[in-house]
Length: 134
Ligand code: ATP
Image 1 (cartoon, rainbow, N blue to C red):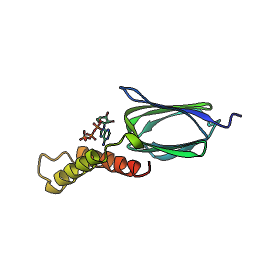
Image 2 (cartoon, protein in one colour):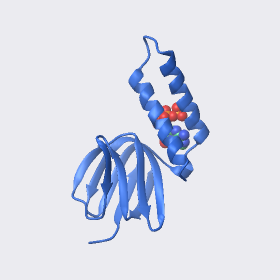
Image 3 (cartoon, helix red, strand yellow):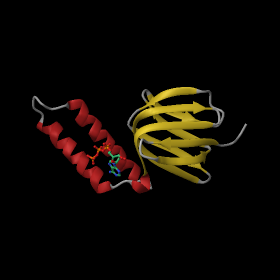
Image 4 (cartoon, protein in one colour):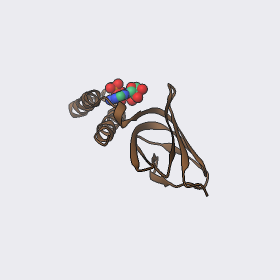
């Protein structure tokens, strides 16, 4: 069996990652999923969270939000609505998005879309956390 598995992360705009990994962690809908080369085929939904993978001696981190992952023994393809490599994250922008969402949640009110603000907060916090690992 090969000792790496190919990882491709694609968004509607572009290819974010195309790399050979020894080990991958993806944020599935019902928790994080660890994938090694030779993994059994599956398809899963991706939540908001962090994709972590090991390539050679490096561990890389990607912030991701929504989408699907197709896992095959030799390849993992992630089709994500948004995905950013740690080095590409604008931390000030994520911080501002976080503060906006927190302010709206704190303010409350009849027209508050709680779910939407919680999601925005989670995306922003994930971006801040991933950027800190670059
Ligand atoms: P904002 O309110 O700052 O736009 P958002 O969570 O609403 O944040 P999204 O709708 O998730 O933004 O993403 C829109 C686009 O902007 C996507 O291409 C995403 O990759 C990119 N993006 C969002 N936030 C950041 C960030 N902090 N750094 C780099 N790219 C970002």
